[in-house]
Image (tube, rainbow, N blue to C red; front, side, top):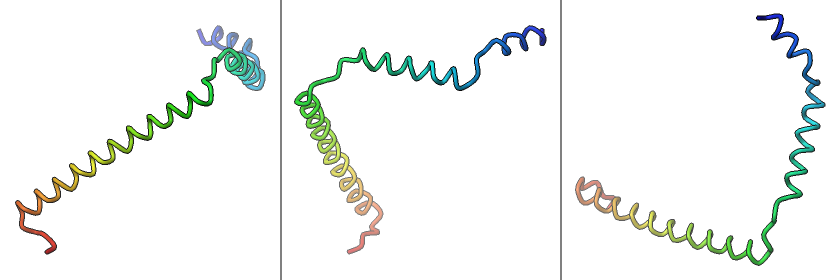
Length: 79
């Protein structure tokens, strides 16, 4: 069993040949990608930023609300 394992490893090309083949495959695949247009990228980025800011506002409001509730319940306010 070990002898057949060594034979299959001996047939493998060296690491640089394998890396070269993989890089060739990656660049070949990147040539086939359909890239979005610049206006579409700007629009998508705007949508993402608006959603992030909306979540930021909601989470911040919840945080302040829970902080006020904790202060009310425990009476450990800094006032």
